[in-house]
Image 1 (cartoon, rainbow, N blue to C red):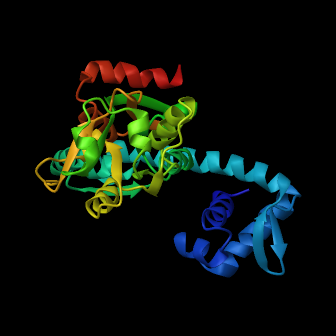
Image 2: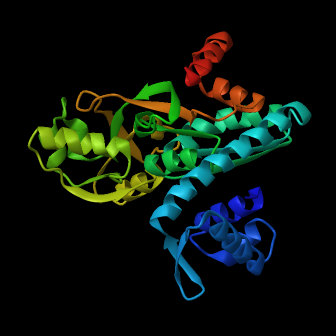
Length: 309
């Protein structure tokens, strides 16, 4: 059993069972990948993949178990590389952040600017998605850190640090009737078409839960994953927008007004998370420190050491 064989299996699954793309990702030939798979299957005595002719269509039952072990091995290989690079190339390498649009648009820019100035040789990547996708990227090793609300903290393979708490605000056109309502209620909200986050987002799940518990059906006109998209449609007078409070900027959103509705919904917490078994490089620690300025460096180091306890 050789590492290259395991890498071929791993990349085939990562590339949706497309052998050609898997071969490209590891800079080898398609026949070479097929041969490595065949040799490993013969060695361990099980068929890892289902096949339709020469095409791979999925993992067999034992193949799924084999792949889970291979994925763990590949993550440890990455850890070994990270350890060696930490001592040999301290200020260079690649760093991937998985996050939601709201974090990428409204919270990350200042931190990223400082990080890039300190580490100009780091190849920085930002992947956007909903919290479930962020969680998946951390677990798969596709992202070094993930930043999202609540849901990533529910996976016991991810170690999370609370960053900050936030709530929601209502955005609308200046002449909207709700702007003059003194104490907005859930019934008031349900009286008008509403535009809010896609229900794949934890924040929106909380919103739907609040309405359900109050036995009130909101009039959801449109959902989106992007606060800027929500504000665009509010500007077209298609409804009122329910967004994260940090996504409203009085200077940039001059055509709209906002109302605080934190009295209607529970506070949410944004976390930054890393896999429990991931070796944290120095620049990764620095990034986490920049994103959690409320924590002292000594406190953060102690906090991160708890991952393996």
